[in-house]
Every structure is written in structure tokens, then in C-alpha cells.
Amino acid sequence: MKRSRHKVLILSTSAGTGHLRAAAALEKVCRNSPGIDQVAHVDALAFTNKLFRDFYSKLYIKLVEDAPTLLGWWYQRSDEPWKTDRMRFLLDRLNTGPLIRLLSDLQPDITICTHFMPAEIISHLITRKQIRAKLSIVVTDFDFHAMWLSRAFHRYFVALDETKAYLSTLGLPAGRITVSGIPVDPAFGKNTNKVALRKQLKLRADTPVILVSAGALGVNPAEQVVRSLRSLSHRAQVVVICGKNPEAKGRVEAELRQGQAGKAEFRVLGYVEDMPAWMGAADLLVSKPGGMTSAEAMASGLPMAIYDPIPGQEERNSDQLLEKGVAIKCNEITILGYKVGRLLSEPERLRAMQFAARKMGRPNAAETVVRTLLSDPEHEAIHVDEEKQEAMAESVRKR
Image (tube, rainbow, N blue to C red):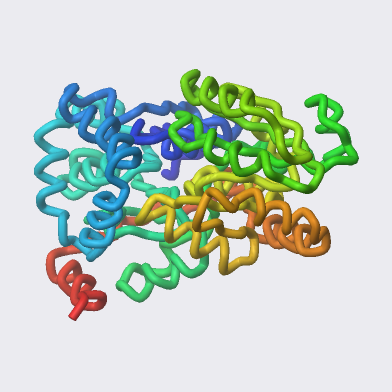
């Protein structure tokens, strides 16, 4: 007899913050869903040894800061179905024994993965019939990289129709792919009253608001962005959010002490809990195009000024945002102030971008994921055997 209530396990990794934020949004929705008995959210890296943890988290941030070109090269080279699969599988199996034991002990009905590493392990357990859980994989970028492919799964959740079309051409059944958007906290896009939000945040209602994000970890070059925005010839309120990095905040404040040449007024903040309110109050977001940050902005109807995307996934996110007309891109940070000023001087263009952002945004993505999983019939996992893997690789292989 089909169970009417479920035990849900959400797995993310702390390699960056996007996977964790998507998982947190899903957890919030699950806790408010009457069809769920129990929900747990775990960081899969917490169940690995320190060497493996550092490899997945600290190395990535180090490459972003010091060797982005190398990171982009690896991203492109590995983006072929199953090309790096055996090495990845061996690495994951050797270092994640405690996570496997946790899954075997909990025996959840539904697992939701916002990172490919735990998805691979659950896929292995399903294939060996050690757990009977449904495996749902939530892709946290607009584009799809081959590392997200799984030997066994029940459902994929992706950001765009284009991504679903790509997976279908690889041979995955379209009926098991849901275009949900990237899950964001339900608070994003909920309050659309800019006047009320600006009053709440002590911002003037009659002056454009530019939000500058240094990322949750504060690793983006916010001081360089501020240096360029200081030349703005258009009146604006610039709010710089530096994340959990007091050094980044100090560098921005030091830059502002150099004087102010333009018409912009600046406010510098560290990490903020009420980012939905700040995005709701703003007219433009200046940021790198990370998957989660971009999804949160779109859910808020907030267009973007993109700079210096990380080679690989951020470049592909950037392509999607530019194609949808929700962003401008600045190839040189030094002229960011000029490009933003030009946009502010064309209010009709800015309003069109805001409309396009609302159209692209999916503020209910997390609800779509949970609702779909709870209404899914009890079906068997899709298994991608070696013959299917080879066919997928052949269909996209570079000649």
C-alpha cells in the first residue's frame, strides 16, 4: 500500500555556498509540507575525512581566486558524458564510508541532492539495492555539466527548458526531467513593494538603488567594483554587501576613504540575513553570475550587471542571462561605472530588463520540487548502463 507520508533526506556539500542555499530552501518547504513525516538536511562533506573535505571545498575556492583559467580548462575538458566518471566514483567511494553508513541506517523514502557527489553515492546504493529511496537531483546552475550525470536516478530538476532538451537528446526520458528553476528561499520575490522595502532598509524611495554583492564568502573583488562605481555621474544609492569576510569589508571601506568623485552614495555592510529584502528594494545587482545568486535575483525581478565570470559554469550562466535580456556584461571592471551609469540614464531599458527578470524568475522553484516529488507515482529508478553511457558520450563527443 502506498505511503501517504514520507521521510526526506536532503544532501548538499559545502563546496561554495550555492548548493547549501538550494538545500536550505528545499528543507524550509519540506518542513511546511503535510505529506512529509521527517526531513533532514546534511552536508555530505561532513561525513568525509579532512583531506577529502579540503579537496572539495577549499581547493575550489583557491582555484577561483588564484587559477580561474585552470578551473575553466578543467570544466570544459571534463564536460563529456562519463569521461571522468570512473575516477570520480573511486574517489567518492574511498572517502565517504560514513555517509554510506548514514544512508543505510536512515533508509529515507526520498533523497534530494543539490550536488553531484552525494548523488553518485546514492546512485551506487540504489544500483546495489542497499536502499530503496527515490533519488532526485537538483541542478544548481542554469547549464548542465556532465558531472551531474548519475548511473541511477528517479528524477532530475533543472533550471531551463533548454537543459531539459539537452538531457532528452542524451537519451534520458523527458518524463523524468522537471523544469523547476533553481530552488531559492521562498522569501525571494514575495514582497514586491519597493517603497515599503526601501523605507524598512532606510533607503530613499526616489533614488535608484544598486546592490553590489561580494558573494556570501566575500571573495569577489568588491573594492575594484566600488572604485569604478565611484565615478558614477548618475545619482544612485550603492549598497555593498561583503558577506562573511571582514577583510573584504575593510578593503571596500578603505577604497571609499580615498574620496568620492561621482554622484553615488555608498553604504557598506557585512553578511546580511535579509537578502530577499535588499534584492526586492534594488533596481540593479552588480555581481558575478553564480547560479544561486542569479536565481535569487531573477526571483526578485532584479536585473544584473555581470563582471568577471568564473570560466566554466559562471560563463555559461552569463550566456543565459544575456540571452534572456536580464543582464549587461562588463568585460573590464574599470568601465563598470560607465556602463551602469548608461543603463541608469535609460529608464525604459532598465524597466524592460526588470520585466524580463521577473519572467525568467522562478520564486516557487523549491515548492515545485517538493510538490512534484510528493505527487510522483511509485516508479522504478532509471538505470544508465554502460551501453547507454557509451551512446551518450558518442552523441556529444568532440571530433
